[in-house]
Length: 196
Image (cartoon, rainbow, N blue to C red; front, top):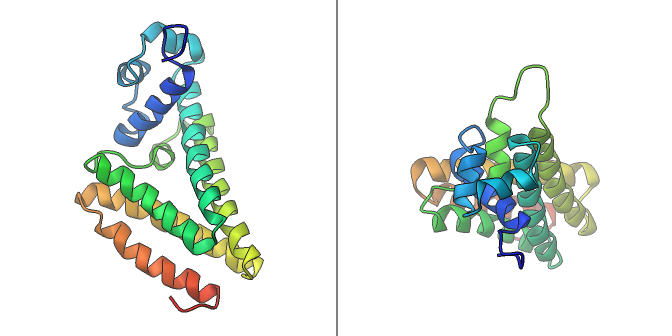
């Protein structure tokens, strides 16, 4: 709670990210977000006067930044450590939520946007994916992987982890993430010229 006695803006954004990760963007109304974040509806509209798209955009940015922060910290120990942390983060989210939550960035990405426009939340999702890929590619490059291969491997990691996260939810099992973890680590190790 903020010192003003009301919920903090960040708590509402975090609540929106969590709700979107569970129900998708279309099912996450402002009213539902307020309830999920235990925030008064009025506070939610006060912080997000432009409505659901503004809140969704900020929720996606929040999630993208939070994941990027973890990834960046762990990549300090190298690409394999970053990969393991990225996988562990998503595994924790799906398992700890009893397979009810996934990735809010992916959730926004797979829903049909309004005709003839790219909503800000979808643009924020693209930025989040690109940010995670950039962090991974940069780390791979710092460890001797050629730039094109590093970019390709980073895209492979992000796409694989996001897809496996969705599969975990559908199957009610962490097995898809566990399976790709082994394969991605082998691929990264090979690119780095190390045994897996």
